Length: 595
Image (tube, rainbow, N blue to C red):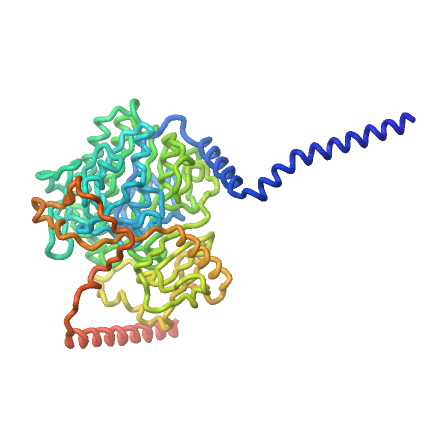
């Protein structure tokens, strides 16, 4: 009898246990099946909480140093030709970023840094913002310095803006910086601060806040900007308020005009542009040394984060080098977008490391807002990730892919929807990386491998040789950039399955793109109409024109006169290039045979 009672009790307990388990499990199961979105939100919340655990206790001082056109091979720890002891030391004592990506041009990189968004989400997919264009960073986008101001930071920018200035609302002081000192256009003379849009339309471009800084020119810009940063540090109380300084150097962009004393250590370099370029990198190194010294002197260093980054790859014809990577500035080959970068900070827990974690320039926005104590998850529309745990602790990067860009205005004359498996029009310039794989469509740009120049004169026509000998017109490339970072082995024909997946991914991204903002030049921007300087030319009470969806390509709308001589010159130039290509191929074959 007792045995029967015990059996009945056991069955009841088992029934209750099963019922209790169902009550617990069924809501979870139904939620996971019916609402994948909530699970993604939970994952995002967990990632934010995990990132918060690795943040410093106090908001750190942030110094972001951005150089212009510094190539992958243009720093001491990548090249024996370059002397950059300060940068090498800071990188070796911090975290060197060896899988770090930027954009191939000035405006795109700066826009992604300051918004945390891809170009397709700001309308800046095409080229750069030119001085006469009535365009700028979208005014409805909250910028990184604005978020840092909300977190209690004192924010300052020194150097090159290049994010538009046609109206005052576009200026740095209206986009989150308490102070600004620098140039608004893309390229200026290092001493006179003259800037030209074309050969004849020139004006003065050095600004203090929202006014033209007449009379402050004459000093080499890297020295002038370094002096201003040191002045900001000297005037600020390091214990009262966190500080954000964005030093956007003009160096090492052309024109190549370093002071002569910096050229002397490189006098044995045969190539003159490379010699001057290397001297300019040394001046940047000296500037960083002086700024680091000031951080220590004025009590900022112990609670500071120093980030060093280039904005895009170098141009080999003007002294830079991306060797051994393929391509150059303005291209979506690795030489145009794989950037030099490192983070140096006493707040990094695991220092003296080389990180190969995937990091993109959009990641700085959420990372720095997170360091400042801001809640990144509340800010929608970001394409970046908080990578501070990756940098500080060596955790895996939350980033699994990068949309390098989709530019609907840049199309090739060959390629088709058929070549894109019916998923993507391969005439469109686009590039994406997912995991180890990188896909390019359309025209990625000049796809050459150019070693550092050693000859005194480097004929510009040689730049075209490798493209001329390419036999097949292609519109799709696929590379395993982890195993083949120099992009020597195109696997598109061997892995159509991967190509198809990445093309589908491009199409998915493209659905979220906004119209391109690339308006025609405005004659009112002429410096001669604005006191001889580049400055805002649209009044504040004038309504903002809607340029969304207005596509304009410079030179396309101009009528061209027929020129028989021009056609003949073009024909003979192409013929000459083909002859030279054949000669180089023959000499290479002979050399290979001799080996």
